[in-house]
Figure 1 (cartoon, rainbow, N blue to C red):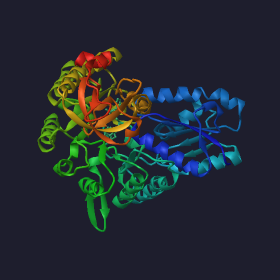
Figure 2: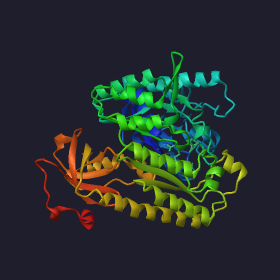
Figure 3: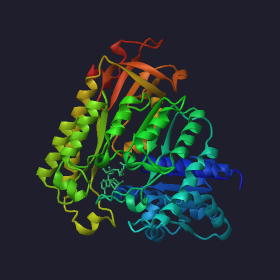
Length: 495
Ligand code: SAH
Ligand code: F3S
């Protein structure tokens, strides 16, 4: 099958980005090459997201657009992988009968075999974990765990070329069962990977040029792995990673406010490679709403954690997620979310209109009763407030020098951020000759440097700021040019 063309499209979160990379690696080993032309591909895979209805609708529309090319080329294989495949396999095959392959996120290591099977039998292949209830036994968990670990460890063979930034999974699934969320149903119970496997993967990536590694988990801070009869917590994993020579920066997402220990904050303070940034979704600023969401922390506990983080980790920035219009959310309850945003002064927030997900506790027991236009206006109000705060805090950085990892030309970086844009974020202005990078605190900086600087850590003086982006010039650099006259209009507003 040498030379077969693979087209893969990734929707949703960073976990999906990593999953797609691993699937590509496995297929590359079997002779596949990637193509950007969907209609020409021999295998088309859509890696889907189920967190909101909107994401599922988008996947369905992509699949719909494949009907024609597929009808012209019977040998084309169309696959749906990821969360939507796991959540609604029957719905997909009913609505999209031209789909050949349906594979949940816990079974992705089976894709190469599934493709071969389809090529021989010309029959549809399905692989689902289908065991994502609280009822699963430890043995079932272990079995599932073993099979997916082989996907992560397959990465060693599948990577091509060098990497600058990489994701590494530390944990699969989630046990929190927030009442609105579909993730525990699609990604199954929480399992932590062995620290040794994680460190080996980090070393392998650093050998291939990785300077920055982001550890991924739904609730990373609840990471815990039994090793030689003792438990290894997340903070210890950070200590071990900090010892990997050649690695410059360590990040991790997403943190869960319910069980966030001071040991992780201490590690952030004491370890030079761990960046001073926390993505800590709050979801709501109202205790009543948090209870209905079953978030397992109160607003007071959340605020205390934010204060403690700022006290223990100087210069830390925080980002958060909010859901507006959750079942029964009153004006007064929404106002409490506004107060929390005002109080915490996040770097940025992601705001989502509540979307009812089939099978969740909220879908079964509560009414999705906040009208769409109320959700929309609350969404805008919260974002407007945050924009004001982001602009104020970014302007506070004018004149300061920040350490930036040069990621690449700003246009290319912009493209790489499409999945984040879907979550509401935006990357800085695309300007020719401009490069983009991030501070340790995850702020986006646009600046002119020479191409050879990609992958290097540079000191940048901040000379312009918008709510989303900082603009700067390299300190002591040949391209340093302080003339404000050359700034883009956006940067000049802030100047
Ligand atoms: N721990 C995970 C959560 C995954 S979902 C992480 O942050 O990576 C990501 C975000 O989507 C959540 O924090 C929540 O704000 C939002 N979300 C989850 N389910 C939702 C729903 N049913 N409707 C609207 N937003 C939702
Ligand atoms: Fe979802 Fe809550 Fe887990 S938001 S991923 S159930 S922590």
